[in-house]
Amino acid sequence: MPIGSKVCDICGPTAGSSAPPAPQVWVPPTNALPAAQLASSAAAWAAPASGQPLTAENAPKAGFWMRAIAYIIDGIIIALPSLALGSAILHADATTRAGINLVIEITYFLYFWSSYGKGQTIGMQLLHMKVVKTDGSLLSVTGALVRFVGLIIASIPFCLGIIWVGIDAKKQGWHDKMAGTYVVSNW
Figure 1 (tube, rainbow, N blue to C red):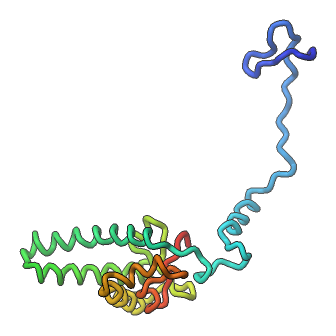
Figure 2 (figure 1 turned 90 degrees about the vertical axis):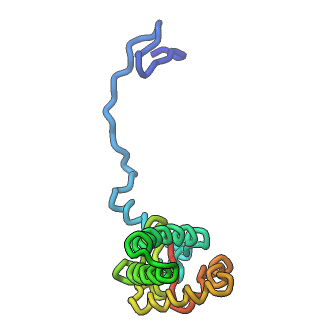
Figure 3 (figure 1 turned 135 degrees about the vertical axis):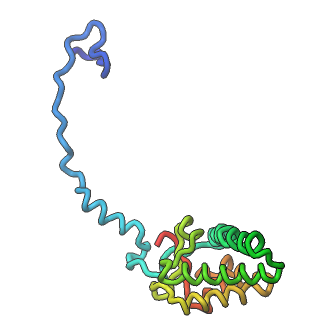
């Protein structure tokens, strides 16, 4: 092909040029990594920069706003059956409805925060978060109960214990400190 002539990838050579070059056989690159090696190195991307294995202590913690959104989602999930059961079915007064709501709320959080629910409420599942103990294991039902009581205590002084998540270096609210837990993201 003469110097200066152009070849179109679709049409072939432009007017005035010679025949198109002969097609070449594709040869896979020799320096490419095998897929198994890429998959194993993906875990290294999620590992902390220090090169230490990922533990609950150095795992990325869920921040205040992500946890707040998860609580709102969980609140809606809890409120719907509570409202239906208290108002529509039992025709209960406000105090009885509050009691029904508390029972549903305790059952919901104790199940989902414990190992039975794999440490994730439905709101946490949607936002890829999980409650784990500081050693990385899942909570027992008793540990989930301690965390729930701690959540009630943390909400009493103008929700200061819950807002503490945004201030604390380890992203722990008072209820997390009482129960010895972290809320980790992408675990």
